[in-house]
Image 1 (cartoon, rainbow, N blue to C red):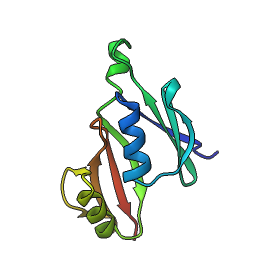
Image 2: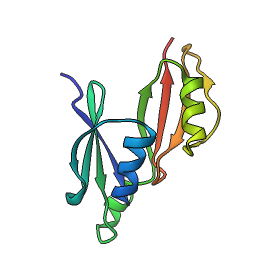
Image 3: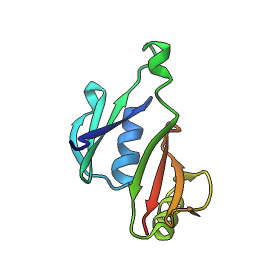
Length: 121
């Protein structure tokens, strides 16, 4: 079994599409933004960004703007942190060395979803 896709929920599809495509440099695999979704090539798995509309139920509204548990592997976390933060990406702190030997840095997308950069040992 392999992970096929991960989903992130947003309130503004056009801003999210720009964030993931231009700032994170993830290639657009399928642009269904007019239908409320956009699929990005995120390596071995796809990242599906889905729209939560203002009229959607409260439980769906709660899906946007939270910790996602998703991490993007980078070869040099310091360089990735510098590039993204200088482009306006909001980080919750500096990259931190982890007890398992790697590094993590948490950042927020345009809707406040928290994602992470990870550099493995």
